Length: 248
Ligand code: NAD
Image (cartoon, rainbow, N blue to C red; front, side, top):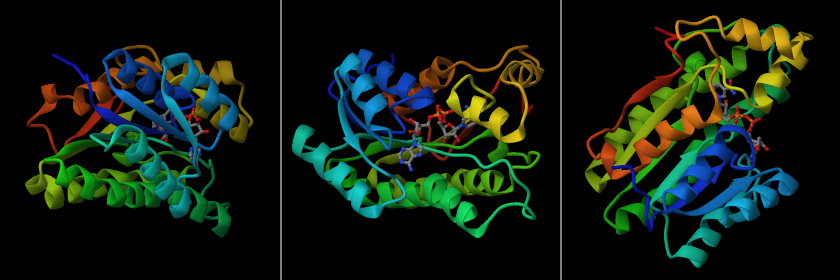
């Protein structure tokens, strides 16, 4: 049922982690994939491996986002699926975080969703519709410790998803949010580093949830592929936790 044959997709943050797993699965399911990421070395590597196109892009830059969409149109003639996934975390309280870090987290995690979606929606609408999936987080649904900017940004992504689903449903565009729990990627290791914790103990603490393990990138990718596909034809405005019942 989950088939993306001929679907033209953009995956942000597709060089590594959840984005990489999703770009890979999209390609396996028949999609034509553009990977947009800050990390050119890893991005080129992933794109080559899966037969996608890599475009270097800082999603915090409107000019970079415009260039990615223009490249996708030139290469594939349009965009049917947008996975707004690039994200960063700063593990700090409001007393600790700098204005610059706050603004960066908001620009990468939230403003990019507005910018890229705003560029892609007219193309999707002209083509009869499309699917946008945004990456939220369990910490977009509930709060978390020493992650004020991240929690604020992911809460914004969750409700921005609903607003976009309402505004653009009449154009045939579905907008959904996937909310991963702790998932084995570079981000989790980066969090351990920022908190001065060992990666191993961080991973084992994160496995303390009803399904008894942390997430794997493929767990999230499968959900995103479902949301991107026609199997989810009547799913829009949904906020779907993929976290082994962590937020339950
Ligand atoms: P990751 O660090 O493994 O991958 C993130 C990717 O985004 C990297 O390839 C990085 O180069 C890219 N990126 C970062 N800043 C960028 C920018 N400004 N422009 C373009 N690309 C940029 O992390 P991940 O765990 O795969 O995270 C993917 C998404 O999942 C993020 O939105 C994150 O907040 C969310 N998430 C992750 C977890 C987790 O436990 N790993 C949990 C909940 C939500």
